[in-house]
Length: 308
Image 1 (cartoon, helix red, strand yellow):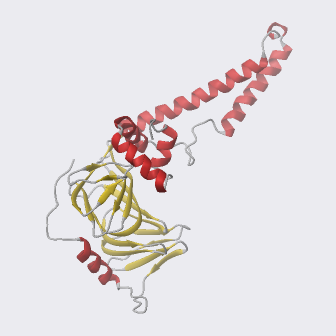
Image 2 (cartoon, rainbow, N blue to C red; image 1 turned 90 degrees about the vertical axis):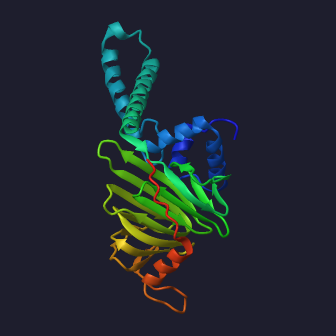
Image 3 (cartoon, rainbow, N blue to C red; image 1 turned 90 degrees about the horizontal axis):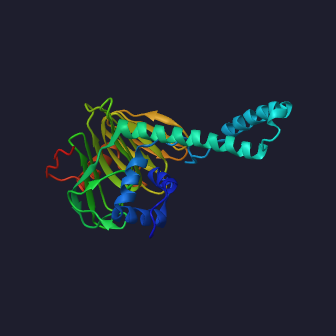
């Protein structure tokens, strides 16, 4: 990728709409290109005007512009003094003016978002084995911002923190995409959003902190204002054990369940259920899922390093 990435593609990338080899290629380019890295940081703060990322005037805007033109055209035809005007040129001018108004509105809103929010950079406090950010290896102490795809290899582990209010540890064969990590300057509230495509994690979000977090998976999402959970994601399901706090679990089809502390849940594309113990399939019960995951991922080393 020799040229800079367009803003439109960066928006899709920041929202997780670019996948596979193309996503990895973009991540590698962003790591090496300061200009694209800065652009991605800004784009990550902007809420797009539509889900598609299309910043062109919508149909309603163009319709209103054309209605305005048609009204003007009627008066134009009834006024002999205006007969020399060229309607097609006027029509294009009006449409162009409408497009500029919409573009200006987007720019103003983007500026507002940029002024109100700042990036909350996470820090890789421990890296074991081969861990990649895009195609580049993650180094211990490295800062990580939204737009980064993290992948752990065989016998590899990664620990992420933000100050003392967020800790996340990922095991082997885990893919995590950081989609949002920012601070609202006005309220001081911190927002985290990560997409966990596969693998196992332990996540600790301080219940006393002024924060909200969302962990998205292929089957749904987990949201909370603070909790301690274990999560395992495979192609068929997402399993969540709630160690402390309360979380909201939602399937991709919209079914929502509020958790109870100490319980385990399974999220599939069709719904959310409290998981029963099934020795035939080798499932752990709720406490075993958390404890076994913790045993695999946690250690006795302290990583309560403040990062601001």
